[in-house]
Amino acid sequence: MIDIKTIRDQAGLVKQSLRKRNENDDVVDVILEFDKQRRKIIEAVNALRGQRNAASKKVAQLKASGENEEAEKVIAQAKQLGQQIATEEKKLSEYEEKIMELLLRIPNICHESVPFGNSEDDNVEVRKWGKPRVFDFEPQAHWDLGPKLKLMDFERAAKLSGSRFTVMYSCFARLERALINFMLDVHTKQHGYTEVWVPHLVKRETMTTTGQLPKFEEEAYRIESDDIFLIPTAEVPLVALRSNEILQEADLPLRYVAYSPCYRREAGSYGKDVRGMIRQHQFDKVELVWLTTPEKSFEDLERLVSDAETVLKLLELPYRVVELCTADLGFGAAKTYDLEVWLPSYNNYKEISSCSNDTDFQARRGNIRYRRRSDGKLVFAHTLNGSGVAIGRALVAVVENYQRSDGRIDVPKVLQPYMNCEVIP
Image (tube, rainbow, N blue to C red; front, top):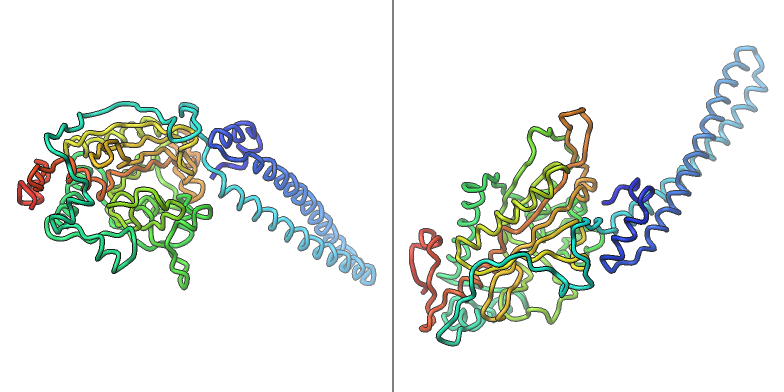
């Protein structure tokens, strides 16, 4: 959430950021007008309270001097003032609710370094690693190879749950589990993250902290009777772990890693990546989250990206790093890098990780602060998040890039201890 003070003092900056994102900037003027009315009401309420306090003192004086009849008149006036105050406070509450509702729907301010663009076509390639494999046979897409090996089953998944779900058997099920354990080991043992096991069902407040609500509620799976949500990513509970807490600067950065299934309705994405496992309603992911200081957050973002890259390098999967342009930034992000892995079925790179600095956007929503060492002042933390990486897409990348002409699949060296085999099946 953007600080209301920023909108008051730097309305032009906020409007410019919204335009860069291809968003309407009229909301800024609406908020400023509501805020103006709100402050007028506060002044009126303070004046009325002053009058009531004066009346209370006068009542005491009149009663002390025995002028009870006159005191009753002043008491009646004070009562009227109380009713006026209650009326104005109700108006104040209504304006504050309107302002908060609008603030929760404004995306984060783009960092000045983010390249301007009108669509994902304007994203900027930062670097590449590895070279796509040149096959001496026609490689098969995972949605053909998996069913042919009887290790991937889309038809029975649809029977169980509908479209965009997958059932996997034997070696593929074990490969999914191997990738999870491998990534958790890399991030905890090599990168020093603290592993966390998180709930998959969270409260409305938890979803609001990270920006999923209220704007993207239609994308989430909600259990209506309890008003709780299936998490779309472990980022949601990981960031909210420290909501309404005061941290110490000496303890920062906090770096968390968690494996979880993720659940997304993918509303509005019909027709995109409908084949195979690229865009599913349920998928596995290893998520990385940092809580850090404003002074170091953009430096820490580069470290976070590097941590995610390590996974792809160890798996020896060709990939590229792309910096997202202003129009393609996520709602809470001030700056984002995507990691895209090479998939032969697309003859192109596809996103496998998105790493973002959300600055203090989420921390304000969740009231996550730390006490600064230099002056003891309470400051909102900065939050970073990134996939480290998406498990299903990593599985797809392994299956497609490591396939043999006979349909079998070589197991990457780093996964062989987890799989207890060198070849699938």
